[in-house]
Image (cartoon, rainbow, N blue to C red; front, side, top):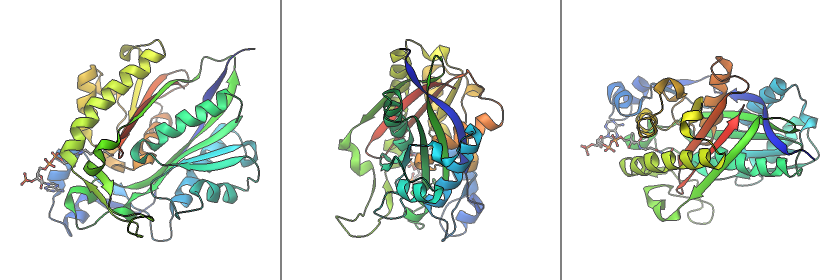
Length: 321
Ligand code: UT7
């Protein structure tokens, strides 16, 4: 019997209409457009309205991914949502989306690995698809990170935005497309460098993002570069073979640092950080979607996705689109 592969058969995205510029943030915290652009590359971010929840953004991205794949919701037997900002402590945002899509079979659950959540979800879902546990799955990265920001802390509130991205992963035989290799890692020793200072079991509150950014930065460049090299190696390939790099969009300087380290041309790196800022688990599928829609990433291209985030968690996923 020929090997089953987990192929990306549809992509979708959703950004809230409301755009917040650097100039707007500069009006309520001590920062400036110049500082934010120079240190991060971010020019604006999208912010969800009070009645726009993570599930709404995720659902819209999911519906577009289904359309793009030529499928209807009932063709899906698994929904996995990567998020750190779920609608509720429970139930999982994935089951809320499952219900809104009118899917009453299969399974739905959330994955929590902060900014690396989508890369983690791809690995889990890929394994379910290639073993036949799922035939067609929706993988969604969706966040309303604006809800957990301390809007008086200039070191964090400038960095993040809201949004969602989705992919349909379909099991297919006799193809060279699909996820070729994936790599995930975590290291809990660095919690204090990047965390949220609240939660159901500790403070009983949602809490706010706290980060010692310059220290996170150093780990991110080193660990991302290593993850991508290992991911390529596991597929019997090298960094030089890859057409496109779709990184987590935390900071343009991180993207540039990793590209320099691995001798990747800047034209090969998909960057949406200027327009979207850091949308945590949504950033990789949003960037992937952007490059598919503008015609850069085409069927058959070799694409490396990567992410780094709280935990620390990090990882990479290599796919032939
Ligand atoms: O997605 C999860 C992973 N997250 C990341 O990977 C984020 C990684 N870190 C970063 O992107 C960067 O470290 C930041 C953008 C957060 C900060 O940039 P930096 O170049 O590392 O600056 P810094 O933290 O070393 O701070 C330099 C100065 C400080 O002032 P002093 O102490 O030198 O007087 C900060 O207080 O910049 C100051 N500063 C600001 N100034 C104006 C920090 N935030 C701001 C701000 N506006 N928003």
